[in-house]
Image (cartoon, rainbow, N blue to C red; front, side, top):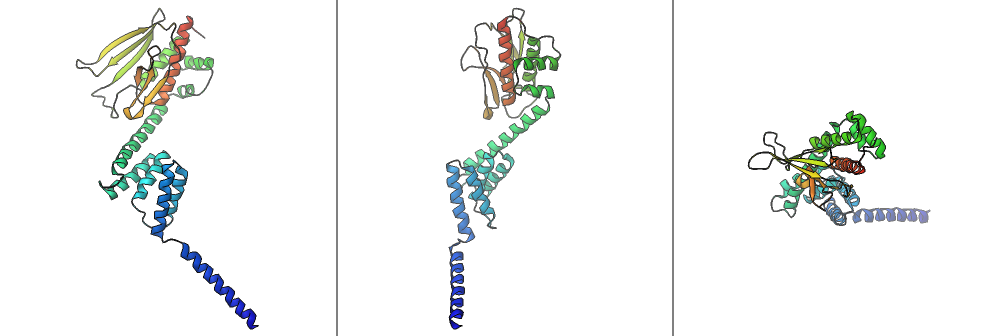
Length: 287
């Protein structure tokens, strides 16, 4: 009986000892936070944002005020996830708490600006889509050329494909005019406006109104014989400079027609212009 009682006591002692040892291995919360921050930093360095996000979440669960650098790393994770409002808030917290002497002070300021502009761009794209008729939105979806042109004729009540394409292109240009700045001031217009026409000889006319001149707005018109040129019109965008463009079909890598930074409109504009040039090259209207 004494033997079993001694063994029972020994067993209980061993369990308590093991439990005590287990808890002794756990780091105090402030040190665990530093460990997790180090792990998050290493994950961000190799662009493993999922792991970084998981480590930062574990810091939140510690129930302590995290070190200031936490907000910088969390901002990076949110920015990667395109949660720009939350990213901006994290960077602002880091800047305020760390001050100008902070290691990432300048980068955090730049990231605040980038997050703000990215959010504004998202809102502009959504506003542009919301202001676009449902039929026009459908045109941006993959479809055959015949369906594309048929939808355009129906949308603009046009009698032929060339007229429908010209109207569509000019509608896109009106909807996304190039200002060259983030702030649009209607009382002081900057940038350029574009319109296109097709001549009786089936030449493509591009009209450009330049507002950045000393003598006031000025129109100029260029003619293009489309025969023999590449009908596939490419586009590009620089979001930090608030501009998208179509590349010139003849002069390689030269920007041809400018519009506001709206990659959806730019992509649709390139498609419509490519289809128009192909139609003009055929010498007869489709449809």
